[in-house]
Image (cartoon, rainbow, N blue to C red):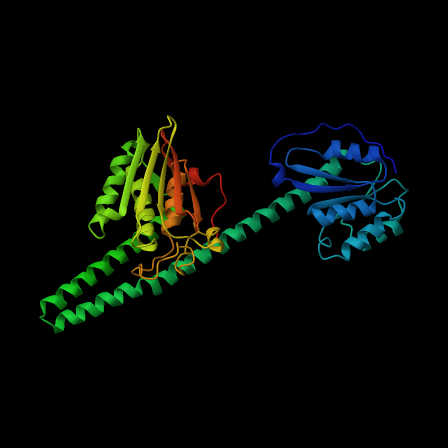
Length: 407
């Protein structure tokens, strides 16, 4: 049924992306009524769903979540009351608020029927556009608050999950090296054999180093979650950073296993300490989990004037099912996210599953990317691409373009 409206000015304040728009469903069998309502209610952040029949309205409601439905009462085939009853009969749509619009004379009986069908209001045409907009805005704000609460609930759930993971780490993962230290100390009290003393001292030093690394990773994640982890870019030569990492690993492994190559000018503006942390993690993983008789390769390609790539590769393959979660925290403790280890390789110490997560976030803080390629034929390679002129940033800015991680 047609209706008349008095002119009203439209406010276009506020803006949201289409993906975050709140949806309003309007149902009327008269096309120009739909156009007029859309013109009246339309604004940035609000998406109008138009339906010319009850059946079309139900199709919309099966696809989209509406904050409110404005339904004309008198329509052919399925009137507004019948549509409302069908909506109330479905768990998906029973909570959608309904405002009935009608051009018939005021009838208390019809109004009661509308409320019995689940309406929150009943407006007669012609109606005051200001009143309709005010009523609609109430439900728009309620939907916005509902979505905000849902987002906050998800955040709280993730925080609780992360806290539980931290407690599990403190209660389990740190207990293992601590037990080794205590057992070795007990042996030291009971022996004077120089060989046994040296072995115990080495075991204590190794366990202490492992515990220190775990604690430092936990602190880094805590800084990331609070937005306090920063990078300080200075003029840096990646060739020198890489050589320092190689020298560190040469003290505990065969230096000939690490092959290094650099093409082009490898200088740029980065945080050398954070990039050392990234490279140390990737090279350490490659040495521990790659084939023990095959080399680990570090290749820097700096021939571009704008960016540089760093590739760390080794023999071995990461299972396909594990790759999607490789950069998530607390996922490598089971070993499912590490390259396949040779049968005769010495077992790598278990970690917290934080190394690759921290590495990926540090790369992101440099406005770079890190990608994985792993196959039986070509082995496993992590490739980092960094702009040569990184800007100083913090984690909040670096993560503003992505969703928070799920624990």
